[in-house]
Amino acid sequence: MNGAQDMGGQMGFGPVAPEENEPLFHGAWEKRALAITLAMGATGSWTIDRSRFMRESMPPAAYLSKSYYDIWATGLERLLLDTGLASAEEIRTGHAVTPPAPVKRVLQAADVPAVLARGGPCDRPATAPARFAVGDRVVTRVMHPKTHTRLPRYARGKPGRIEAVHGTFVLPDTNAHHQGEGPAWLYGIVFDGRDLWGPDGDPLLTVRIDLFEPYLEPAP
Image (cartoon, rainbow, N blue to C red; front, side):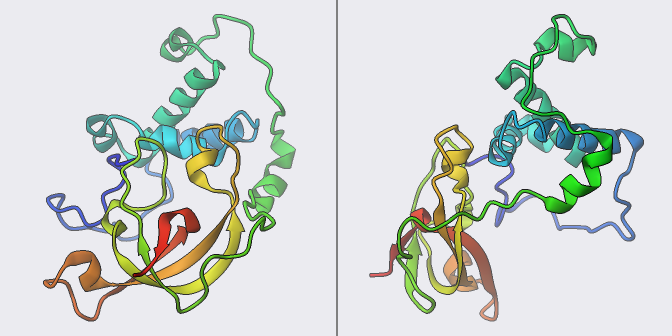
């Protein structure tokens, strides 16, 4: 969706100013926010794509006023409400009102290192041949879905060239909305900076983006 998180190429937000020697966390609460989010994700109550959607679909004014881990914490609250695992009153007060709802599994402390090391692979067997090959010219679709997508706004309707064929992976656009994993071919696409930013763009700039096959059409 065209949410506040999709800021690539947007003007008016000032320069990016990386923090020198930035710590992993700026406050103890940030560690807890990340830990609770990961622990709840391990219950299997939602997918990673659903969790991204719940963070990225916040009202822009709210999203842009929050820090990184505040967005994570707010996204978790939305997921808990969405799945019925907590009520608004319970989130507001921090106390359980009703007996806890069952979850598929509970992450035990002793299992954390192994679970984090294993990660969450999202590659899947191919169900159809790849539509494109390395070197093919393609054009990204023009689309403005209200639902989840990983096709950035600044790269829509733009010509590019297939640079890599990565294989088939879970499609976030369907997986975020309980419509199945819908495995799709994923390609590495290289774009000329001037095609993305216009004739005033840096002529030496190229941009590489990994994009799913449903986002692409053959170049005319």
